[in-house]
Length: 191
Image (cartoon, rainbow, N blue to C red; front, side, top):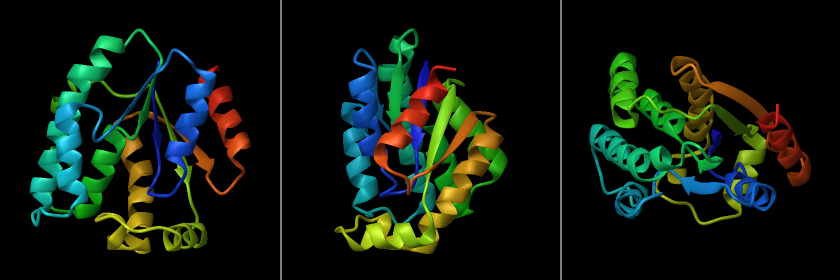
């Protein structure tokens, strides 16, 4: 089964993936962007905020996604794959940018992924207050520097993206305690 853990920065994706790694010991753990050697370089470019063009940023994410599907996802489709972010994030960020049509976003992502999407996506959803607090506790990267309102728009766009791509989305309150979130994810996977 191929699943993805989604959420805006500080939602707890890394923490949940670590907990899932302990539970699903044979799972392939990956991330997007940056799940391949080429992807690591692409991720650095994007997080450094060097690109001025939102279209260029979108195309970089697509390049990473295509490489990730080819190198990591396709060879492991018969196994449990847990990904930190996925095509859902890519579509969500592009929707918020507003420079590319919804149709083009969907078609280009289908092209980049060869139509291989996660079977189930878990969105760790934060409130504005929780997000503001968590961001205040860390040094911000290029995406986080865009602000709380921007990140909350991304969170809503993740929901919209799952509908556009027809991927099952499980909403999870990310302000709850870590173990109850992990258990909810495990229970949903095992259904």
